[in-house]
Image (cartoon, rainbow, N blue to C red; front, side, top):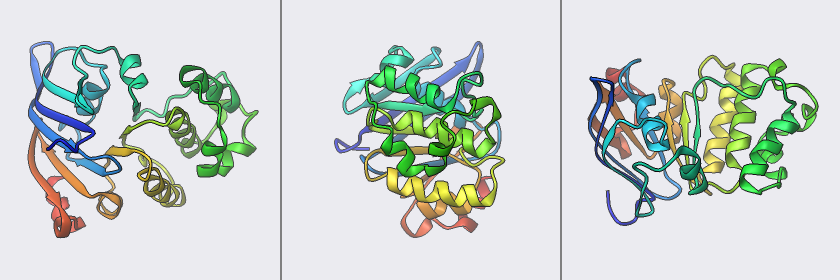
Length: 229
């Protein structure tokens, strides 16, 4: 972690009631960098992203974006600062069309340039008038990412983006993440080790709420990471 980081986490501790979930987490993300967090289910990976995004209040330590503290800041204000959280559940506004879902994203950011969304996800252009509740899992993931990139975010927090998706969609997302990293830093929680090893510059392995190792460079190989899943 250094002064060039767009996102800095130091000594982050998180609890749900009396149950402590994260212990002294420390990580750094540079602009345009793709960083992955891997670990078994229940290791605390999703909790880490939710804490950064402001959805969990029982937090101590330090979380900063471009030097500005995020602790105690409301989630929508964190989003306004350019940190967008894409949750694991793939929930969209089911009774609204794809167009209306994007309109909500545009209203929040005042960014109505949907061409950037359909450039990444051409299929959404064909689905504009379909209710989001009738989209496939892959199409919902496209819509969620599309909404998140409106407003030119500086950091994207992406939770299990490929879970349950067809290989063709995963391959497309791999390309999209590479392209998005030219404009924003990405922090991705993901179980697909071949994917994260292919796109990440750095991987943090989390076990029982603690970062147990940091991998970079030649260490970014699927076989090395497998020991942490």
